[in-house]
Image 1 (cartoon, rainbow, N blue to C red):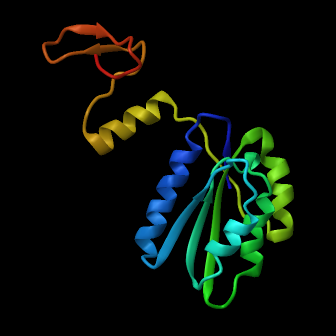
Image 2 (tube, rainbow, N blue to C red):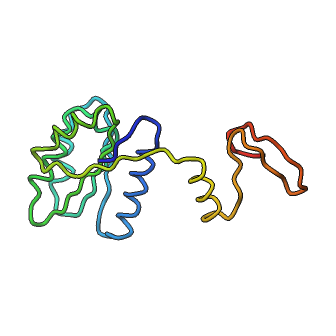
Length: 156
């Protein structure tokens, strides 16, 4: 489970985890589940009745009706199946989702934290080779002129 407050990037982080999982497990298929108010039992039973290697991504598990249906797949997987579940959950609901997951093995939780400005700057330098301008920062341009960035860092 990936947890933290709303808007921190849990879904984006989980999608990246799914992509990386696929690069390491070429035989796997990824399925994403998001609450649409429908009863999932029949869909899950049909989609995951076949042999195979599956990663099930449950976005906002705290909002999913009957999360235990997806978790039951872990408990009921056969010898010809490999099923993993990755879920995002909002921090305020983590305890209740962990309570639902406990009978199915509980899993592991990872809490994300918002990047600090210096971490963002270092990533920009290291991975994209540029000097970022963050909101409200004083940034110099190529002519040596100084400008204040007031647009959230999109440009200076």
